[in-house]
Length: 196
Image (cartoon, rainbow, N blue to C red; front, side, top):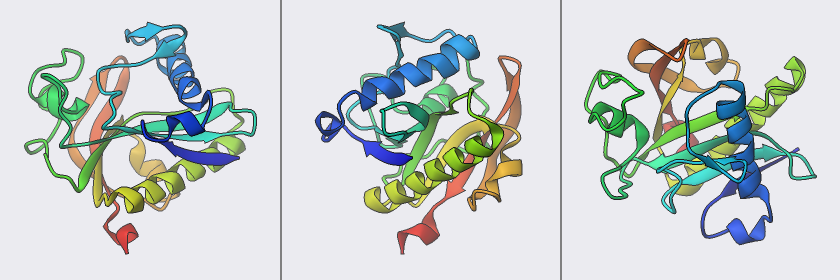
C-alpha cells in the first residue's frame, strides 16, 4: 500500500493515478451515493479541481485507488469560485446550506479545505481502517509540506467516532445538517502540532 500527494507540478510522474482518483470519486459519489455531479470519461470532477489543489491517494501497486481526498487552500480563487465551504456560505452552491459554519469562512494561507474524501466501498472493515489511517498520515505529511496549520472539512456527522482512532484533533465548526439523506457537519482539523 502506498500514499501519494499529487499536484499539477508532479502529475506527469504518476501515470494514470490522477485519472484513477477521479474514477474512484465517480464510483464513490455518483455511482454509490447517487450524487448529481459533473462527470466525463468515467471521471468525476468539479470547479475546485484546479492547479491550486492537491489530491491525496492511498493506492496499491497496480494503481488502484483505495482512498483519497482533495486539499484546496482557502486563498484559492477561480472565476467566481474560491473553495466549496466558503462558496456554500456565500450562496453560490444550492446543494449545501449557507449557514453551515458558526463563523465567516476563513481566507488564510495556513488553512486549507478538505473535500471529496472517500474510502473504496468494497474493502473489508479491517482493511478500511488501515487505508483510512494511511490517508490520515498522508494528510499529516501534506500539512507539513504545505505549511498547513488547520483544515476545514464537511464530514458525515459521526466524525467524532473515528477522529480519536486516527489521532486527529477535531472540533465542530458548524451545525449538523441533513444533505442527501446523510447528516453532515463542518469540522476543524488541527495540524498545528504536526508542523514542528
